[in-house]
Image 1 (cartoon, rainbow, N blue to C red):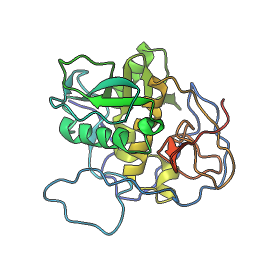
Image 2: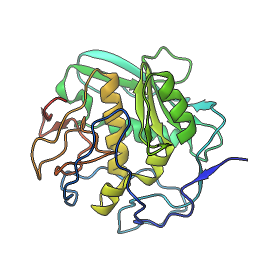
Image 3: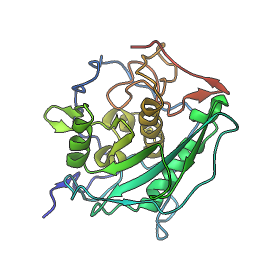
Length: 257
């Protein structure tokens, strides 16, 4: 029997916020403003879903915290995005028995990485999603909290906060997205009415940013967009949520940590 996390979560409901990441700097409390950066398209809707005038902040419904540790890989190939530069190929994979569809997950990942504000915005990198058996450079996984914890620990990263797996991570060749965060976002994003789609774009770009060799960055000033390499899952420190490494056609970054 699968352990379950989340329960029936009402959209916009706030749950207790966790304080820090075991492998990251400690958050400093600060006011969080509403989302002011350009919106990210909402995640793919099911065919039966009716249009809503309100952004989805969290996904409702039950989902597993523990899975079998095996994955279904995406079977399709996407276009190459980016004008010039090194080509990095990636696969997508979803843990089995999670109720998540690998095609939907792949579409959101590809949309985040294919946006002109993502990592190809500097003109020196190209990215392409490839199927399971193609040559690849890294894989983007969607995993239950327990599986994500094991995979991250194997790569030398502890994603635990207050005794439970909380964040996502990057291990060599692996971008590992925690299913808890994929469905529930984080308290301070929800409190600021930041759409779940924005959080998803952020976590993909942040962890892929690590795979591309980028380290953590600090908020450059109160009220400014948070650099994508800020640990926005844990805190904003006065900045506002931002999922993009490039803004207005230029690399947007903060002080290195």
